[in-house]
Length: 142
Image 1 (cartoon, rainbow, N blue to C red):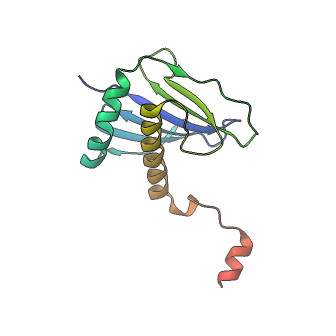
Image 2 (tube, rainbow, N blue to C red):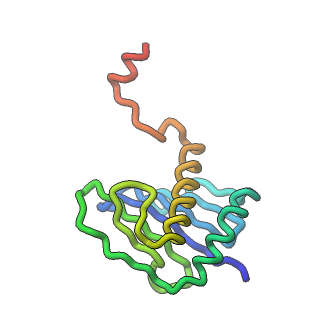
């Protein structure tokens, strides 16, 4: 049984800076920002070993686990996990911090792994964007 294409996305409430990770089978990974592919690569053997059991278990879970976003501030985040061939996302979650929790132990573990993977990919691509440096911090270092 091949694992289907799946997308994990995290975005601000206003959909600013939507970042997503698309896994095609358990082979290929693409990182998207605002819907544009910004990097692609094959999964490493280690990533395949980590994700395979989680994805196979999740595929057998009843679908979907849609959680209505709780009321939160404008800086709240929305997280979705969707399989391409399913009508609605498996998980839709509002959260104040990443990785999101509350979709049940199995989904939470998968969300944690996918979120860490997405963060690493974005950091590898553009380390200088990984955290904001304020102008006064630069002056202190000189």
